[in-house]
Image (cartoon, rainbow, N blue to C red; front, side):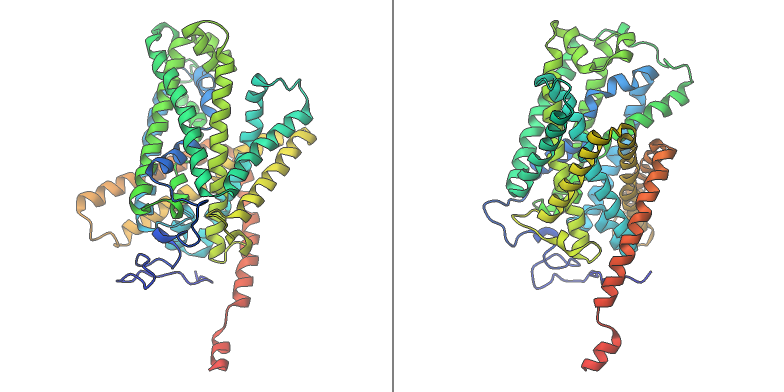
Length: 482
């Protein structure tokens, strides 16, 4: 298709601005260098890794063991298979970021490979995923907050708490990338260490008699594997976090790929060990009925009734870190698209290294959705919207893997060794299968609703495309001026 906004073509030499070849000035490794001050700071490898881990590990880990227990220990096999797919996707993002180390991640990759429309779809779907997920995280976090601070079942108090949990990370983002990185690093350490302690400590209290049958549901190994995988699939959303914020990462060609793989692998260790520890410390029949599996595991290991309070505190820290990271990501993709004229121009405004307009619009939309959830009693509608985000997240995943396939099949990778080419091809195939499995796991209703969201975005693209074409100088205008 004909693109309305020209894209930078690769050149043999670096530009006069010092940018890497083929990158527009102000983007790539040097993006964000202008205007840096004491409130801005590039993310190094530790903070970029923490961003990936923090966004993958939200609050779901505290409920996952009980959610998959009815299927039996076959769910552990499903988890292992999904981990392979997630790491393959992480490696593909690392390859893509090495070629295009610019803020926007999947949006940049899709646009470079297939043009403006594909790039817009990636940006639009990812943005929907981010702000709806923020609302869901905040509402879920209120349940854990109620364990620490009695809310007495007050809907106004719960709504106020949910809004506060969204606006505090937004304020941290508005303060600058320096504070975003600090909050993310501290939150990741505070939630990762206790979770790992529970996971490792549980192995010392492990009792194989608690595991229960391999196929508890009796639907057959393949059926149980697919059913449990459908629940577990969504645990790895967020592997793209470092790629989306590549413009804020120091030495992105090197560090984005490393942070993506390290963060995904570390999250996988926590997930697998934590689930295994809970399976081995809580009797299977009790686990299938549990509403707080990690609390039950802590109580079984050490006795007492303090597990609920400890897990609630960990869950709050975990979700606060996830909200902090997702708030940044929710603004980065619209920022990149706005710079190319595919999103409204105000999304491209930045202050202290952060796209402030994107942060504000995102937190306002998430807040309105939260208020709607509490005031309209629309629990079912809210759950449907959350499921929609699991589908919308797969759109940029599929477009990114397609961009890598396009790169490999077009012959542009001819300079690499045959072994490297084969390895990249296998990784991309696994990542594509993982992404398609995510779509299937979303369910028919979520896919149906998600497609409607995408079609709404097509109307926005039509408006932006027409506006760009109207303001762009035509050949006749150029001839008249000549």
